[in-house]
Image (cartoon, rainbow, N blue to C red; front, side):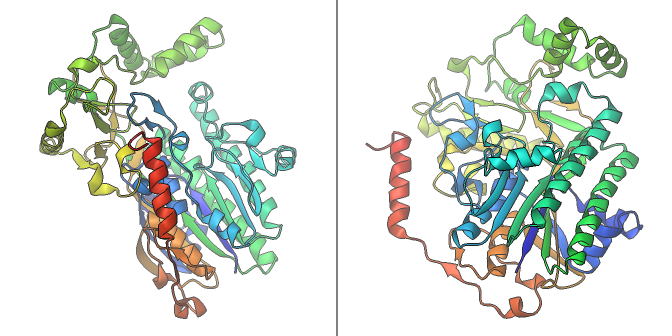
Length: 503
């Protein structure tokens, strides 16, 4: 049994299906007509992180303690990477490795640094150290000899690429990363997991330019064709699973959550000239002529620095804590209550907490903004690290920002933004043909474990997608692994001590 997971960050069936039926994506058409496929429901909020974490672990954010790219530390106003706040959960490749399966992991966004595994690993786009980019470390030199290119995450670099360069560069990155994938599948392995970010990047920037977007889907389609050809040459009976962390849609309407909180007198900020000035410049720099002027001047150090500072202007809001009841950080629409006893300068009493949450959610829903209590979406040991209120994007609210200084609650967006419907396509000797299914992001990990005949941890939240199988896998009994209750209690006590709730 061999299973190869191909992650296509941001891929959506809303585009793949019609283009495949029109003959523009022949490999996708082959994979779907000869396999099983459907929408893959993502997490809320629909973000790359925690979506890949949930997909790889089979668990909801409340169990893994990861709710966004950055999140608020407990009893603090500091925001940091979630990986530094919680213990790492075992991902699908960790479990398979523990069972003696040979694995490789390439460019998974939830892998910040490569670590020892029964196989090899290349950290993803959020890697924190060049020294720990690969396991084994000798692999890094091997990759660079193959001209391996990492995803571009530096906003300074991305902002200074014109449209042609942006498009070309992401196709080049995909080319180099598929070459690495082809290198890995030549070696002995049981399970592989590789993620490609091209579609996410270009859809954010070029969503309204469908001809250009199509060229990038066709680029992926050609690489998948090359992959199938290589497997066919080797007579390799690998089962391929293609997934995305979320889908995509237009970003025409941005909800400014902090502006709304200010109007509701729940958030108070200091009035600074620099804040208003920066926001004004941030708005005008989006105009084509301004961008062109700044782009031409960017070769001069001063203008380059100014351009980047303007373009990166974000939501660092000067909050007056002793007058604020609720606030949001970053750009993801997560709302925190400034709770007394929990936050350093909290003013909302415990007995007022639920009333305030209900009020905020009700009034957001009256504006057709979807909002949820954290316990409506998550459950697990890390629930208390979650934001108090989570806002979800949809076709009405396309994205959310915590920026202030606009004087209104909604602004016009551009490009594309995330949607909850990712993709699931399975193809191979053990997969049923031409079957359309519905799946959730938590279902991927338990389904793969079942394919290998490995017991599924009972604390996984997904189900085995048994309907996609044919042959022996249909008859195979689903096995579950018992949870060690003693270790679970020890883990809970450690977590409570870490938070200072017991001594």
